[in-house]
Amino acid sequence: MTEDFDVDPVDKALALWGLQNASARFVAGRENRVYRVEDASGTYALRLRRPGYRGADELASELHWLFAMADAGLNVPEPQKSLTGALMEPLGERHVDLLEWLSGKPLGQSRDPLELDDSVATFRDLGRMMAKLHNACDAWQRPSWFKRCHWNLDGFLGEAPLWGRFWENSTLDVETRTLLVEFREKATADLAAVQEGLDYGLVHGDLVRENVMVDGDQLSMIDFDDGGFGFRLFDVATALIKNLGEPNFPDLQAALIGGYREYRPLDDRHLPLFMGLRAVTYVGWIVPRMEEEGSPARNIRFINTARDLCGAYLNKTA
Ligand SMILES: Nc1ncnc2c1ncn2[C@@H]1O[C@H](COP(=O)(O)OP(=O)(O)O)[C@@H](O)[C@H]1O
Ligand SMILES: N[C@@H](CCOP(=O)(O)O)C(=O)O
Image 1 (cartoon, rainbow, N blue to C red):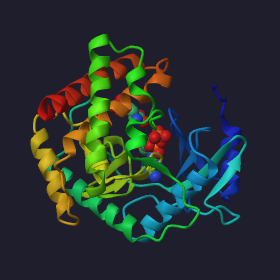
Image 2: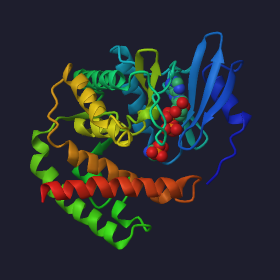
Image 3: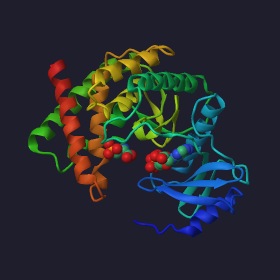
Image 4: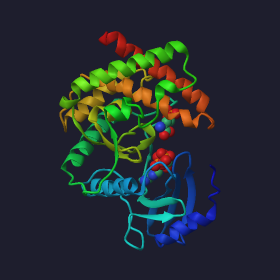
């Protein structure tokens, strides 16, 4: 369903935060609708959350989590309270929230080569920031009603994976489908065998380049929409997967893991499994989005990455 969100709902939303005189510029709308809002009091990200993706309890959980992480000194956008003192407000069929606007620009775009002065140093910093996030998550006392998704065995590989039944993507050729089905079976057995020993807790879930902001030597994280309970290696795999084409990928990986280990232990023996798991999530994610602009090319890219990573995993562990 398309919605015609022009000035009206945005004005209504701004008024809920007492920002009726602020200027608002549309920034993004593929998932949530995001506006950059500015007035004398500061700059903010107004988010009209997409309907149907997360329940009100999950959205509220995300905001309380974010608030706690900002409070703990993490570089994340602090949610702003509305005039009623709430972190989010209902607006029609949606919920809206207002976050602190973080300075800088995204670390990169998925399809383009990285353009960083020192990509290895940046990935070391990213590893450090990720470990600090995991530490702060473990230290945080969650409210009893806290509810987020679970990136666990079922969430990746069960009958209804969080991002969809990747093996049923109708564009898969027979050979690739067979490979992904085989990966699903093997990954299920392997994850079941090792999961008890793996670091598990709250994870960002989508630390791709677009969700890491860079301002000078300062990094920050946005978009906790897919955050939930998960294996910490999932965050590592997510941060790495869109960089596989970088000529210095092994150095980026080593730097990320090295930076992480400065603040938190990390057993990376099962990283290839999580690279495969991360890759197949995208093959499922694209299925209901196949008609969107850019989707055919994205779909091919996701399938190729999954074929490479899952194929490598199966060959290595055969
Ligand atoms: N707090 C923020 N500070 C700065 N930029 C933001 C902030 N929140 C969102 N943005 C910008 O808006 C874009 C979309 O926001 P995001 O939360 O990633 O939504 P979605 O994943 O739904 O597209 C981001 O890529 C970023 O450019
Ligand atoms: N989950 C991503 C998928 C887009 O991947 P990309 O590699 O094309 O950037 C999203 O939310 O956009």
